[in-house]
Image (cartoon, rainbow, N blue to C red):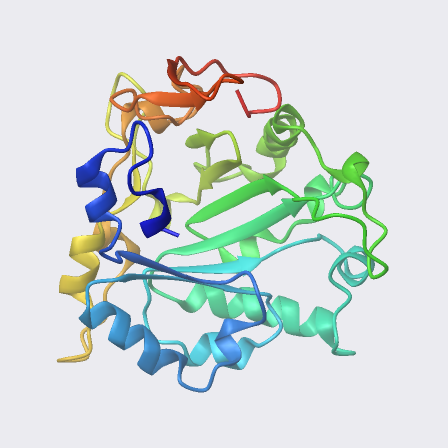
Length: 288
């Protein structure tokens, strides 16, 4: 895929060459990566090569979460707030799926490194259960809230494009969650990009200490620090606070840049097959 773009108009040669060096590995999308019997060995190999590890689990294997060695970022899919809605959305294989789900969140709280609740919003399915999401159980460092992606018609699913919320609807959902999720904590809106909204967790492992234009907001991982901290040699544990970095001002909540680095130049191809520079303008859909 990288080689195919060589020679395209507007290609930055240095960026193209840089793309051949793998820096991050996302263990997600298809299947359940935490079931892989050599997952710890694999992540160790990634870290030895200074490749960050992002693992997503569907919250059905608590014993695997407990046995997982420290990685860069551990996500748990939290697709519903009640037993009935979780069954309808995830169609779990286990009869005790709800107990497994809750146990996974409990295990997540015990992990010392960066953890995330990943919530995928599906209209008419899981956007009305604001107060029931068990935030306190897993106490994640971050909560990622995003819209479901429609992958086309399927006999195995009755979802349509009508079930896909617009970015503004995702944002409105996040705003409505603030009163209940932030009660008794210092949770607040932190980062926003057109495909997701992020929320830092309470102050016991908080990474957010300010707002745009004042004190520094730190919710971005420092990947180089991660590789220094991995405890394989002497068994020393480390925590999220050991590898955070300041969040760029253009990435904080309500920043006018909406998560796009202003030093970058955006291009688009016209109907005449010309590549022209464009200025990003946010829309309700988040797609520009």
